[in-house]
Structure formats: structure tokens, C-alpha cells
Image 1 (spheres, rainbow, N blue to C red):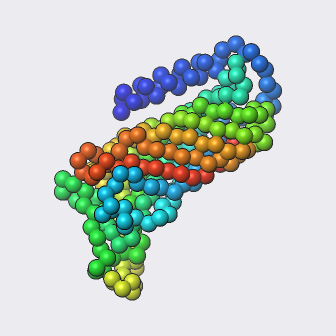
Image 2 (image 1 turned 60 degrees about the horizontal axis):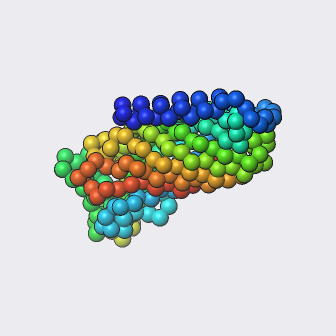
Image 3 (image 1 turned 90 degrees about the vertical axis):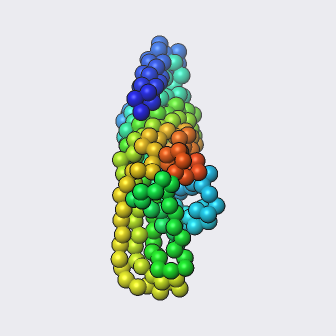
Length: 239
């Protein structure tokens, strides 16, 4: 984590330093604010997981990310800017009649099928990371950010702050409700505590589509097949 933080810091400093070079073209930016919120609504996928697990993952796994960003325009190239921020990135994976026993003491993470007996109607595995995103941004009309085509590529580095599973509403194998019991388990034992992801987004005005692909695995080596998180979703951001 220390090495990643050092690389991230060096990249941020060098990128922002470039933006301070002598201007070649001047564009009026009006009241464009440097700091802004970036909110992302996403659906999540696991890449590389075993079929015995992926067959029990539901199709729509919603989550949200929120970051406070600081944007610095390149004076030598007004259509380009660099941004760095801090925030929270989350992920939810919803299972259909399967449980992930993250509080287990086994050497491998157990995924237990529950389709032939009592099971939870709703069951998810959720993670939350404190993250530092960096973006290199392009804006076709920097003087009118709310009326411009824009795009960005970047990377984000995060540290795991929470991992838990939550099951709600017990039912039998036929789907008949038994009671409203809720079970929640917290544990980071099986998880990589550092996350690095490549990011990209493209859009118009304050709206854009984004994608993020984990370079690091979700879980530690050996506890599951090498599983990567993929996020695709919708971004709301002023820049």
C-alpha cells in the first residue's frame, strides 16, 4: 500500500505540475468551479469466478460511488485537465440461494448452496473502500462544461474499510416465507485490503457512462479463483 500511495502521489504532482505551464491558448472559463462532487450509480460483475458460484449471482447488482474531486485545467491545452479526489466506492453482489461464509476459518472461502433447504430470500456480499481517484479529462468546450462532450481515463486506488454479508427473510426451498430473520457477518479475512482499478467514462454535460475494471483481485490469492470486479454505470459530475 505504501508503494502504491507513493506512485499515486508522484503521478498526481507531475500531472498537476504540467497544468501550470505557460498558456499557449487562453479560454475563458467563467464561473467553472475546480472542486465538485462525482456520483456514480453502477451495476457490478465478477470476472473470473467459478461457474459454481457465478450461476447463483443475480443479474443486477447495484451499488454507488461518491467522490469529492479537484480539477485543474492544463493552461497549455485548455481542453485537457487533471483531477484528483477522495471518496467511497462500494460494491454489492446479490446471490440467489447461495451464501458466502466470509466469517469461516477455512483456508478457502466457502460458497454454500442453499437451494434445497431453508434459505434467505435476499442475500448479498457488500464491500466499501476509501478511494483516491485520478483522471485525465478531455472537454470539447471547456468554457461551457454543461453543454460539452467530455471524456476521461484514469485510475483509482483504495483501501478496504468494510466487508460484510447480509441475509434477510428466511424461506423454505419452495419459496414460502418462514420469518423475517436477518443475519449479518463482518470479516475482511479473505479479502485483498488494497484495490487498484482502471477507469474510463464518456458523456455530455453533467451526465456520462463509466466503466471500471479491477487490476487487483477482490480476494487474497488461493482462497478463490482470481476474481476481478467490473463496474458499469452512470456518472453525474459537473466536470
